[in-house]
Figure 1 (spheres, rainbow, N blue to C red):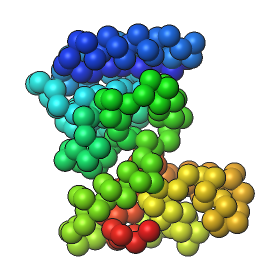
Figure 2: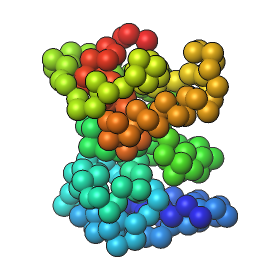
Figure 3: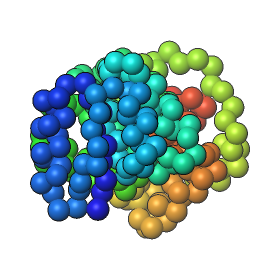
Figure 4: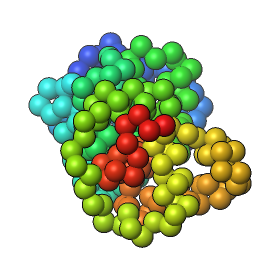
Length: 220
């Protein structure tokens, strides 16, 4: 059973999401709150598999709440997904840096919302290739000088290659086809790269790849 925490300051949106998610046999909403501060408290108390957080909330916004959840060792298994009204919300990349697994538009189709919760629960990032490109090109087109990342030098050449393709928005299946290797081998490379870099999920691999200069905007 996938346990979900909802955080949005609009009761109607929370009610709609809750009704939709609770209708699924493998998903249950274990809590709902109206501000970021309560979201952090409830995450600590309930330890949900997925926390859906509105990017703009009173007391504590979605990014600050994400940062606090991501900094708590006891919440390592909680996958945070940011809810936003705009595909290129100025806060999205900051949310990924803070530890979010991805983001969803509030006008998402019901079937896509349900599938996205399942994807997040598995530890995969909710970033399609098209969205990844647009985000990077919009907000990292003129990034600061690449910074050294502890652990990056420990990646093998193949792990770096796979990480770069993850940053390009490729799925494991697409990477396997591109490199002519097995799906299981790709999963192993991704997992090892995450472990060496201390990344929570694929979304943070994307952040590492760009911030360290492993890949550059427009270099897909």
